[in-house]
Image (cartoon, rainbow, N blue to C red):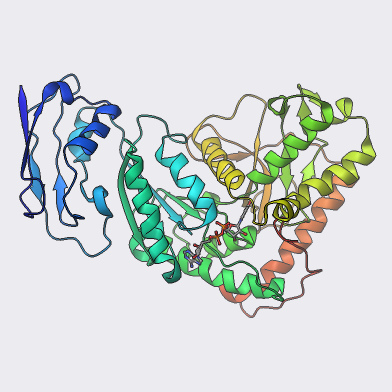
Length: 441
Ligand SMILES: NC(=O)c1ccc[n+]([C@@H]2O[C@H](COP(=O)([O-])OP(=O)(O)OC[C@H]3O[C@@H](n4cnc5c(N)ncnc54)[C@H](O)[C@@H]3O)[C@@H](O)[C@H]2O)c1
């Protein structure tokens, strides 16, 4: 049986293509084949949609390719303007509904690793189509095009749509996930308060845009620093979205802590579990060796060197980012991207029995006595539906409580410093000290 694909919107498109059924099936490999071999536009298309009609067990003819109204500039990028008709595909029950993922700072170093992991299916699985909306700054627009070109050339079967732009209100439309990475780095001589203000404004604006146009159950992971307070600003500006849906990324810190414990204990790092990072993603963060386990045993039963745990280990995790900059000449990007993918996977797959993961989440209602209305890294578990709950059976000692209190004080001060961005009045900046981000020297 032969099927026909026709494009009618523009003479610069291939007008008609005949395919044999052997070339068409519902597998991602074949969809990739179709994209590669059949529907490649002659010039960059902006005004056509391809509709594929396929049955679950066999291909149904014909494949109709419909012209649609011209789309506004940047509505889709290049080959991704040739979108498959997902409704028809969903009828086959072979493909899941497309997930809309927004990535801000998409032309930056972290995104350069992350986007390709997401598009390959690593987070959501090999049968989950995704659409990517890439948000950049005005300055990075050309670079965004470069990123989109690389995504085109990667021929990812699961990547159904790519949009690039600089307007969050356009790109956040119906977002299921928002990975907010884009932020300004702290410049020479800039006070931490200055960084809080300059980046806080970005996250206030993006919170408003999420509130206006994203899916009401969008999951938001804030990576751009200072990420805890940026996440707080973002959620305060998005009252329609549950505060619980906002996360500040502390997974990289958790991964670093696991690695150092494994190294000291002489075991492979998959033997380290129950690792909590408490508090702020700054040098006041607290890697919790009291509750962590190695081979199922409390860390302190395996690593008996309390001084190393309290001093060397803690400081090593807190300052790992700075040491890496010294070696690399730039901040960690690949391992940060890995940790973002880990953080997402932790929310969409059930947490292994007895284990947990760290994430900077909203403190209101927390069982640990941490001040309410902050975004604070705490131990979480998920049943894989995108939501999480805080872990209850945690033990504390004086050392741990003292450290947590210090990080809490820092976050309370950061919150006062951005009151003008959270709708809580006039900002008063009395930061206890100019602590650094883990990636600063
Ligand atoms: N939470 C963590 O664990 C962690 C780890 C590493 C880095 N970070 C932070 O992540 C952020 C990004 O790091 P990177 O290495 O990718 O930086 P980068 O400078 O390579 O990229 C940042 C990108 O964001 C863009 N950008 C700036 N303002 C924007 C805005 N308003 N909207 C959209 N895009 C905007 C820039 O043009 C740039 O392309 C930094 O704030 C960094 O401190 C966090």
